[in-house]
Amino acid sequence: MGANTVLNHAALSHGRTSSAPRIPALSAGHNQPWRQPACPTVGLMAGNQIDLEDLLGTKRNAVPKQEPQRIRWDKALGKRIRHRRTQLGLSMDRVAEAVGCSYQQVQKYELGRNAIKAALVPVLAETLAVPVTWFFESSDA
Image (cartoon, rainbow, N blue to C red; front, side, top):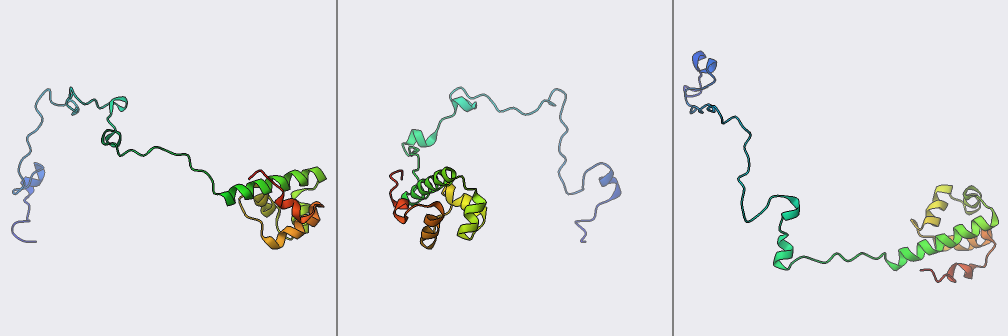
């Protein structure tokens, strides 16, 4: 420590250092929290805020995103598989055992979260007692 950084006991007891400027204490009446001064032209409330993108004309209109065709097809196919499975009274476990996967995977196929592999289509067709072309007759997608 150099000569400039040494603090004496008296300076520490008063909360100041010899090199630091003294900060004046708040006088009476100034112990209120600081408030933003009111501005007559711009309100600070959420309802009065100005949207700069809207003002400048750069705001993009929110267009609802449509799912890709592939995802719509997977969901439609899964819906048909679930419908046929319940028609036959088969459980997901039974279908999963016949197909060679877990019931969670069958559930993902039925909800359209996972795409059905082409090699699985003939096995599913046999399990659900439908022709292979049945999978491609859907007009839901």
